[in-house]
Length: 179
Image (cartoon, rainbow, N blue to C red; front, side):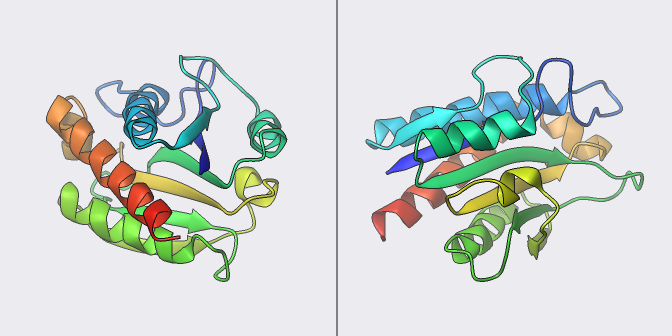
């Protein structure tokens, strides 16, 4: 199976920034590279948008996935809100009939348990460019709220990062093994 892993933001676009100056782009890159390594150890092919802190447009991301004829597209992000108490994971898909709808539910369930956060569920949206412009089933993970000081503090822990990465990669591998 060929996965496309899109690590949100990068370079001039740091994405959300927590109160302690933790940048979404750096966190999702770190998590994503661990997921990539785990998938590759299990004989999965992985294409990524980036492997360092560089900026790539949304069109570039979907175009690269399409050109590489990937089977599935997974975009990894941290959420943010003006309410500093907001927390929880959620996964976005283009529509409820997507082949990755059940996978998205499993990611939410497993991730919420792994890092003890709320399961905000699977949401449907036509507004995300990477979900709209990819030719393969796609999902966008919002791991948790970087704007929540306790979540941001946890992101400094290597164990927490590994728990996130392990939860996502094991859920993706379980999906791949059951096809």
